[in-house]
Image (cartoon, rainbow, N blue to C red; front, top):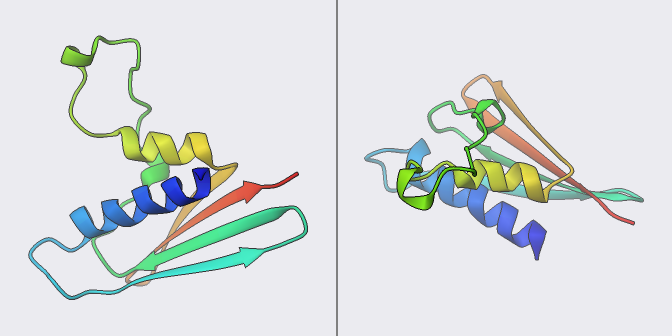
Length: 101
């Protein structure tokens, strides 16, 4: 369930922000597995955005004082064991790894 939620958050962010004004662009999602981990690699050619560099939200603030948004990338980092970002040419490459028992 955590993996599904993390992938959904990442893909929704790409759809919402990476391609402003464009309707038909592609997003690639691939899965890789090892003995004790599962890696999800999401690639797009949208606007560069590094979710790993985003500042952690201040969860101590009352709800009415918190800015709208910003919890999706926080959630990715909480749900996954490791989240990394690379910009290679015109591609955003987001790699999320979840270690298993």
